Length: 352
Image (cartoon, rainbow, N blue to C red; front, top):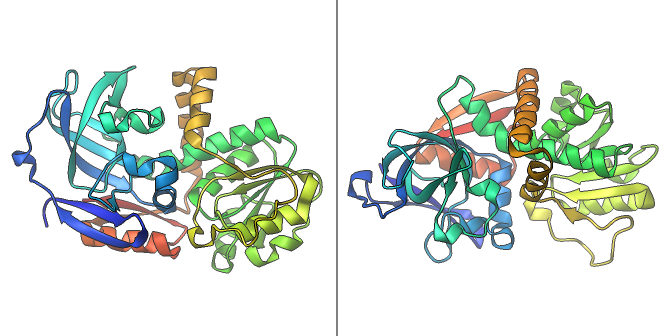
């Protein structure tokens, strides 16, 4: 199939379907619209989280599909094939939020030195997800597609911890995930401590990176031995692990942030009883991004993230980028991320 959308059953993320879409030449553009060809995008457990909380946080609204089906958003690069939008030139290459499709039509307008999606159905959604930036090709495009969305979250989490719990040891679940590793790197750079919670199969990998002071299996979370105040960053979204950490540290737990859902099958708590310590708070990166962009200015914020991410990329010689071409390869990458069997040292880039 040459022209397609990759759709996901919103009620059962394991069900996917490839649906044909009109060829680019057959598409007519309304005033203000542009036709974009998707060049490449990354796919990680973070994208699975978009599907898991798609209804609660509006992720299904970005790229609507047929009743009961959705298009999980991804981050990557696209090129303008045709444009009927003022200031948006044919051939322009953009980085931003994309659907898993060969091409798509969207409303685009110039905005603050970049571009913003102006589609009516995306009104009211977070500005961070509606922004596109001019993106000439570079040798690091695969790393940018993979790490920019994840590392931006890492950066913002570290910023929050430095403000809310500067003296605390950070316990990070799903410690082998790229978001967690970026956070651990930031924590280490400011001289603070991080402890990894991870699965048996990832212990050796995480230990080998040297980013964490301790590497602990999930089964041992209730026996963690840490002095002083503690902050919990829950990337896994596993209710059982979260309960174990809260009960282990109680009032010594000064902050508890729920970030992701890499363990999406274990999100439901075993009990409705309140947990000891602070109430877990969902960390929504766009809110923190908006705050820091206002505090520092958008340009200064972007510079800080870019510089920190460049250091992280340069230190990440453990990371292998694998490219995949076509919808069948995408289906395999998707299934691997959904099942949690994807290798932690691999980053997946899909070329439709």
